[in-house]
Length: 51
Image 1 (cartoon, rainbow, N blue to C red):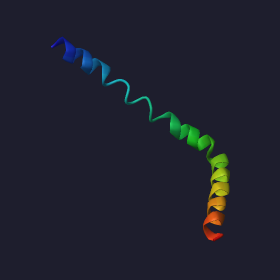
Image 2 (tube, helix red, strand yellow):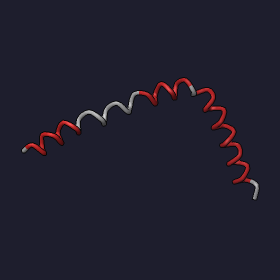
Image 3 (tube, rainbow, N blue to C red):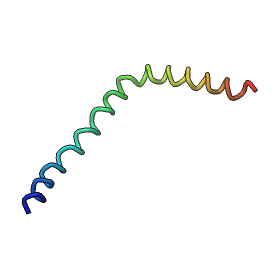
């Protein structure tokens, strides 16, 4: 009985704190990320169409 109680206390807290921060970071770096993605996509397209 005691072990089950301890497990139930440890489980509920950790899973929720993670989802919030990545959205803010994505919004701040969206412009820079777009430029980097465009460069990467351009290189990939060149490699695919060269042969």
